[in-house]
Amino acid sequence: MNELSRRTVLKAAGGLTAALGLGAGTILATSSAASAGVGDGFGLRVVDRNEADPRMKYYRFATDAIGWNPAVNVLLPDDYDSGRTYPVLYLLHGGGTDQDFITFDRMGIRQLTAGRPIIVVMPDGGHAGWYSNPVHSNTGPRNWETFHIDQLRPWIEANFRTFAEYDGRAVAGFSMGGFGALKYAAKYYGHFASVSSHSGPASIRRDGGLVVNWANLSSAAIDLAGGTVYGAPLWDEARVTADNPVQRIESYRNKRVFLVAGTSPDPINFFDMANETQVLAGHREFRALLGRAGIEHEWHEEPGGHIFRGTMFSRDLDGIIARLRKA
Image 1 (cartoon, rainbow, N blue to C red):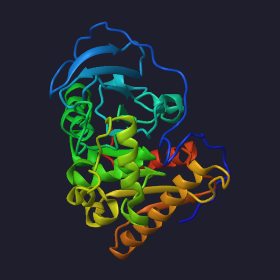
Image 2 (image 1 turned 90 degrees about the vertical axis):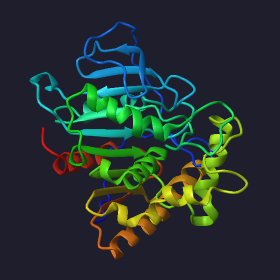
Image 3 (image 1 turned 120 degrees about the vertical axis):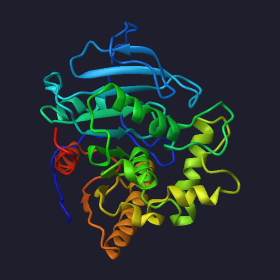
Image 4 (image 1 turned 30 degrees about the horizontal axis):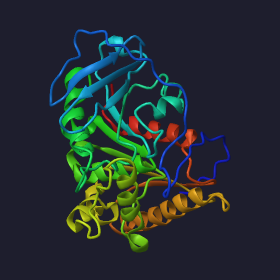
């Protein structure tokens, strides 16, 4: 299906050669006040929190998986105090030095989810973490995959009323986070019943491994002090294959799959052009493979470039809620 919507979009900065991410904005105030009911566990120790807002809860952790203290915003439904149990969406941010757990709050996530019966979890993922445990780091541990899958997921399920099951979880993301969502949904098949990629790479070996090479270069420059996600000059080939959506097609069977890519990046903006040209080609390759395998998926090609589209996210969220177990 091809929906060429001309409705207003929420624009975000991105760059497959500079920073895969969103824009800037206000931050959530923090507090170190203790709160009963939410505590340590699963390798996470809460070192900071702010639970004053009725919907948005902030936590920062000490963890051996990451060499600094990553954070998460947990956005609760308006009626969370009703005592009901809810499905959960893990929403992953893009890359760039201004991208973190607050990114989607800057983009209006509270308004986009108002009245929706779902918990949204928005964790740190590193400025160029690529939702991976890197082959090599010169700055201490940066094991984002371990943090998200082995630590944060069970911590959320222990501390909030969520359905801790396949049909209770979705994962989505923009740009680098869209890649992370596709990767996590395939690699951890039993964890997520719905996966959404908003302008996230779906084919990381194509064009001479452009995305793999960029992941290595960006992580080396921004996060790993010369270390790399996939190894250089020689890649860890098994890891690349395990992370590459187009090589994991059967892992998307019986899931809801939602894909958005832009068709008209700015021709005079090199970053926008490099990003979305690669994303669109990868999505078309991925969709063709899904189609040949008989795997259902919903796709949209939209005017514009490497931007986060609020209207497409709202449509996606409707589909996520319809697919997951009801609150």
